[in-house]
Image (cartoon, rainbow, N blue to C red; front, side, top):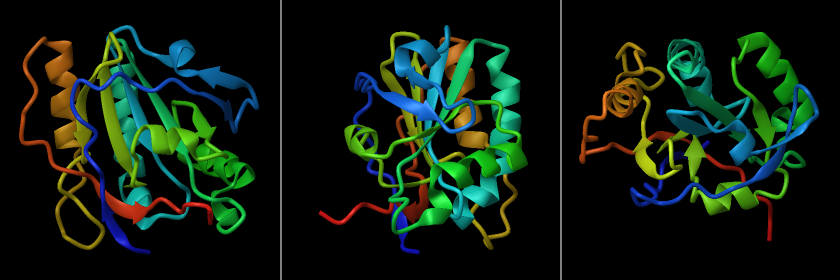
Length: 186
């Protein structure tokens, strides 16, 4: 596990579209089908990463708190499932059921979506407005496994509240930190 920061895609970037399989329903969904009326959070997660496990409970709370206000949440796993079978679709289904994710958990088998988003780590968070323009990218909060800071979702919640209340976003957005995405060998 290599501690990796997110790449911080430029603000204002249009959300790259995708069409990916949901590991729970086995249906294929596009970004346009899943986008929220107020905004959309796209998250790159995986099953085995201790940084994702550390925030899962709060992530579920945030999704429950903000879905009712018009935001949608979309989780994507892009890890190489051949090299990391614990991150494959069957294991994703089990993780979804264990965590009771209130959002689709999509599998990016080709890794094209992760590359389009310039995703680097898990977890990696992107908040898009109602026009699918990037307004926030970075960490959920300052908590990391073992640092003693409580998981509260402060940074992501603040960004969601700013969209909800038409307030400007902070310009000092901090990158997320976590396990590097497990890329397929070229």
